[in-house]
Length: 585
Image (cartoon, rainbow, N blue to C red):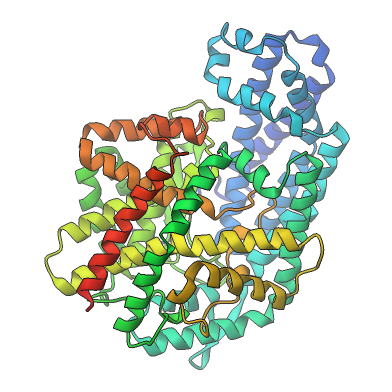
């Protein structure tokens, strides 16, 4: 089994003749979009809609291949200057069609009786959701000149600042145990069974951040100010309103989700205090022990062990999921191990042109790493369902993006717990699930509060590193309450989490809570309905490319604006918390 991914399904390198050919085709497609925008009066309404579908398909398919190759190369090695240069070149090319694309979209939005026209053509029917979304979003389009300017400025604005944060954190040297290690490596030590290692790693991590805090603070300040300005210019009431609109999600759904989360915060604090007591602490849990393994959790797994473990579970659920995961391990979809220059964390990237995915992790052999693989391969499974749609119907919004991934986590963990008859092992498994649930509920809530506070404060002040740390600690106090030791929290969580550093994806935090609880609700339906529900589940995943999140949920008979749905998912976690508290007494 290869431990690094194979990107040859895209290109063998930046000198691959196929890349040169695709770049030329990309330029031609861009020229076609510009030409279409200049000759709008030549098209009938139906012709314009069909031309839009044709050109968007061509541009997005080529851009996807080129961008993904450059981005994956850069993620695996942030010192790859060829990759960084190519991303800049591609951003420049795309900026040239920002204004023409806006002009085409404006023309589409002005078409009278557009639904009647859509109903007359099968291709248009297939893309009706996309076309009607263009009409809905037309009120947020700017002038052609402004659209072009925003696109050009973003290259040296939010995108460049985001690249800076990624580069600095991936190359940061941390002084630890007489040597130097990467940030992702030292953060992985938070899962070490030795409490002295966990505490030393935590202290070393915090001491390393001041080396880059000023630069990264500049990055975050600049990105958020750009987002605030653009959101206002486009007529959104706030960056959150823009994020919800882009997510195809109602404010009522977010309100119901957050309301239920707030109600259940005391249950999570009960778990944290019980864990603290079991580890020998008085009061709240110190941050460096948030990920402390409990029970029999010292076993280390190889990548082969991880493959076999996952395949054994997934084959009982669905043959398509099992076969896809086997292919991922056998055919070099996954880049496993941390190394200098490689970005931290984990992600899945859909390679639509090949009908595959590529997964990055920083695997170090813990059971948590197996769960992370299950999570990312859940994204891959979601990708596989939307591959059945037309190319332009394969993108899905942030909230539902975490559904299949978290469903995989629940499936793996609940199966492991159900099959366990050893008390210490059961403690380890339940606690591991509660640890992850705490991250996607409590920590995500703290991240949501932090980002909201940054957006609120940024118009009035430049936020220094010290101010960023202050806002982060305040958010952690609100979310974790007395579950954490107030004298030992993590003020630099704003610096190491890449989700804050996007000009196009603000509030990339609540989708994790959404996905986690939505997945639990779906899992409950699977337990109730059995195998027949699996096909409904797949249909729902496929629908996410052509529906709002609320309409996609209706495929499974779920009303996302009902707070009781979210309470049900949280109640199942609260039951596990009670079981955990009894086991560790």
